[in-house]
Image (tube, rainbow over all chains, first blue to last red; front, side, top):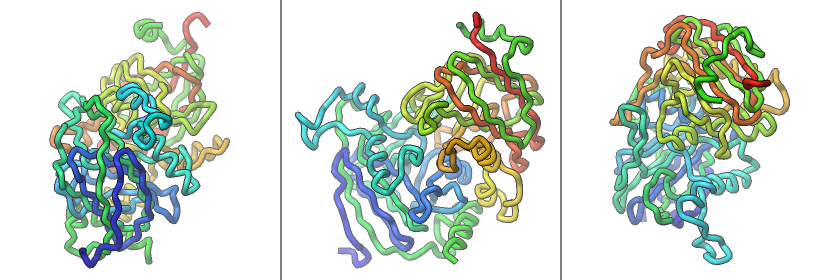
Length: 237
Length: 217
């Protein structure tokens, strides 16, 4: 085992997980079977009114996708997490998450009564339930990122889900730059054309990781990120 | 009522008609069935806009749900502005501009520090106006209720390679966007004060807001 690993976990298909990722650690997510989707929302655990902000993340880095070198901005100009490793090359920040109506329409119903823990789940309700465990409610729902999924925007603005973005063994690693409440969910991407309810599992590894050095790939990506790291470091002074 | 009928409205029979100066907030309820028009008076002026269910602020405009449900990132005639609970808040029924953004969000003093310079914290920003509007409105709205907004009249293209850019506006003096409320909504506008990028052509200008009752009332 990696000497920097603190613990590992398996996130089952269609399941939800949460953790307060401490500054100085990282979360490594592995797509075990391929074609996984991991919805993720992020908060400053010390003040959850500060949370991941999709537009600030996109416009600071002039991106509509996430990959190694990109960082996740809070609405307060600080960096919640940095993407320090990525073998997929594209993660979707645009499409949001599945909800009960969409899952029922696409896959039909599958209640707990008949299907036990294979019952159909949706990401929105799962996020809301997990948020409630931290005293948060639907007013606090942040914009999810869909790790391992790719959505291309064409010349007229149309969004296209690109199947096969993530092979078995694909890895993305998030370094926590603050003490970050992260909630993960493995429901399928809402634009995934697969007509079958087939969510996939992922492996999670939490490791000790040193803070961003002066030559860090995320810090050097853009001058905006350098300022973002400066503002984040000031928070801990 | 059809889009064509909606377009026959004129300012003489508007129930409500106001000017929002650059850098000012505006907050107002729009009732189900009413028509709501925002006019870009001088051209290329971003009107940062939020909507809530007027009877349940927990239900609010969702940028991600709106673009995903129509599978297109641009808002224009026919776009249903979706709530966080999967309901339609308003429908865009007329649009002489042709394209509006909902990915670029609202400027903030903090994001200005990241984007431009840490020394720019003092500059006025949309999220200051949003906070001023909802604090003044009261009724329990807080910072956490400020979700990702619409930028009417703003042009933020995305490329196939996943790049996002801020381009000169496609709007022009007198262009407008008109919506029909599908439920009673609370609308909040920050008429954007941004001076650091071309979203307001480096010269923030007023917008006009008008509300009509449905024809026959």
